[in-house]
Every structure is written in C-alpha cells, then in structure tokens.
Image (cartoon, rainbow, N blue to C red; front, side):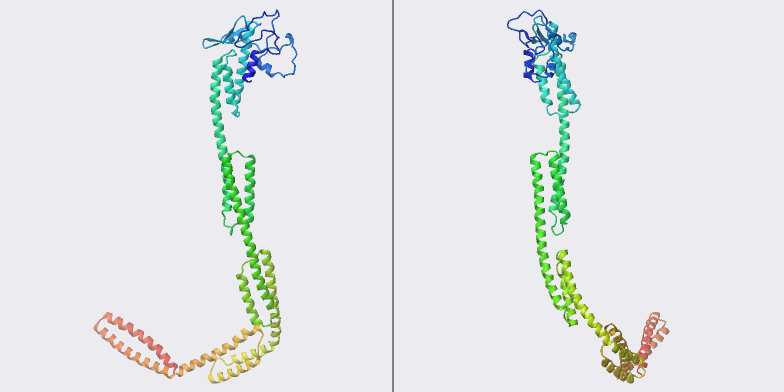
Length: 490
C-alpha cells in the first residue's frame, strides 16, 4: 500500500460504509459538525480488507445488514495506545504524549478507535509478511524500500497501536536485511569468482592452443577443441552469471584474439603444406620420368646403378600428401619392377645357357683340388696354369653358382701360392745369412751370461744371480726360436 493510497483511505469513505456527510478524517476535524443520523452505521472494514476486494466500475450501495464481519478489536489493549472522544476524534498515545490521528464522526468512541487500530494492524501485517520473507531468505531487492515505507507509515501517526514495538521490529528487520544482503553479496561474489575462473580457463586454454608451434600442432584435434571452447563460451554467455561488461569484453577480446591467431596459423600452415606437397610431387614426378625411361634399358649393370641413385634421391625427397605420395610411389616402383623383371628374365636365360659351363668348371675344381697338398711345387704350378687356361675357355656360369665355383679354384691357387712363398723363404740367402749371424751372436751372449751367473753364485750375490738367471732364460728362448728358423733353411 502506497502513502497516497493510505491517505485516500483516511480521508474518504469506503464502499461498505454508509455515505454520510461526516466521514472519518485523519488528523483533522470537520469544519461544521452535522448531526448524526438516527441509525448507527455498521463498522467499516479495514483498509486492507477493502483493498483486497475486486474493484468494479460502479460499486452499488450495500445494505448495512450485508456488511462482512469485522475482526474484533481488543479495546482494552487498544486503550493502552490510544483514545477516542465523543465527536469521533482519535488520539495516539506514544511515550506519554498524545498525537491526533484522525476523526471518525457519526460513530461511537469504540468504533472510531477500532477503525484506527485496524489501520495499525494492517501495518503490522505488512511487517509480519516482510519478516517471513527475511526468514525465508528471499531476495532483498525491494526489502529496503518496504522498510522505508513501513517507517513512513508509522511516522505519519495515522493509526493506533504499539508504534515503538513496531519500530523496534522494523529496526531488527533492517539489520537482518543488511545481513541477508551481505550474505547475498558474498554468495554472488563467490559464484562470480567461480564463473570468472571458468571463463578465464576457457580463454587460457584457447590462448595455449593458439601459442602452439604450427609445425607440431595436431590440427584436427586442436580445431575440434577450439570449437568446443567456443561452444562453452556461448553457453556461459547464455546461461552463466554476468561478470560485468568490462570484464566480459576483456575476456572476449582475449578469446577472440586467440581464435583469430589459431585460424591464421592454421590457414598459413595448410597453405605452406599445399606448396610443399606441390614441390614434393613435382620433384618425385621428375624421378618417376627418369625411372620410366630406364625401364626399357638392357644395360643391366649401368641401369641398376641408376635405379639405386634414383632410389637414394627418392628417400631424400620431402613427402607429398599421403594420397599423392602413395600414387607416386606406385608409379616409381612400377618402373623399377619392369626393369628388374626384364633383367631377371635375361639372367634366367643366361643361367640356362651357362649350365653346361658349370659342369666343366666343377670338374676343373676337382682336378685342381687333387694337387693338394703340394709335394712337387714346380709340377703343381704347371698343372694349375693349365687348369686356369681351360677355366677361361669354359666361359661363364650361372650367377647363383659364380661365387661358389670361383671360391673353389681360389682355394687351390692360394695353397700353391703359399707353398711357393715358403719355398722362397727357405732358399733366400740373405735371410739365411741373417739367421746364421743371429744364431752366433746369441750363442756368444748365452756363454757370457753363464759365466756371469757362475761368478755371482760363487760370490753369493743373490741380486746378480737373479738378474743373470732372468737374462740367460730370455736368451735361451730366443736361441731356440732362431735355431728353428735356421733348420727351415737346411
């Protein structure tokens, strides 16, 4: 109920009241008293009850007998806080003082007092309703406005009741509302902190993704994650707590900047990747062209070497896209396969032709092996030369047997060569002379060491005995080896 509505109710009659010239007047007295009618009007309903009734465009007069029952007023209790005079004037008793609250002419003193008590009850009802809202921890948005209105109503002195008790309740309410508002602010701040942290986490992750090295980023995974972050941001904007325009704009600018950087890096990466793929594809197509030209070559050795060179270049070339690279490799490998298949076919034909040569060379190997061990060096050398001549005349053998047969003849050649070198070593006059000289020197040295040993033993010099014994043992070992070498020359 607003102040203007309350004033209207205190200065005007209600539809339920008999229309008289002497309506209740708050705080004033009628200018010219009018005699009251013979019939006493029924008690009027309270302003709250009146306000709750549905309004009609033109209310009709209601008979006195149909007026609703008015809640009984405890006049004894009411007398503690107010009094009424015979002319309908009513006074509020507050802190020992009386304050005129209004006049209800044409009614008894009890009716006049009851009217203004019910006005106070309406104020108390509003007060109780507000207390219930505070107890239920309802939002405090308009509670301070309601408290101010209650104070204003109690301060206007237009009702009768325990104003001080009501003001005390208002004071208590005001303090409770402050505490409730503080709790609301704390909860709001906590929720805002959580919301701010969630938004900042979205922004920080987006910035971390955007700051990644474009060469190592997994673009498919990162792009999907960036889209998820954007959806999370939109959902937070739609249903999350407001953070304030400045804060939200600052976070949005950071998030938008991270997305812009990420998109720019992604476009640049794939543009460069396309360029690299084109360059790699061009380089490998050039290698394929060379390989396809070599595919029909019959210069088997030279062409095989060229294919090895092309393969090394292929391995060193950058990769194109997987699809292109697989197709290019299939073409390159196809050219190689064509060449090597032709070479294999040619080798197979040669192997069939050389099979007869293999039989001849295996017989020559058996003949050469019969020369071992070498007992007559000159005869062995002459026979081996004859075998070599026939070996060359026999011609080529199949490739699969070439290494085996060559190794068989080489083994005999190595044995004959070793026998020849041994014979030369035995007959070398210079080596023989050197051996004889060394033998003479060692024998003289050993004779001297034996004399030194005998002298040391006779003198009892243990140190010299040990030294002479060690030197003598070493020289005797050398003498044994030189004697064996000398025996080889005999």
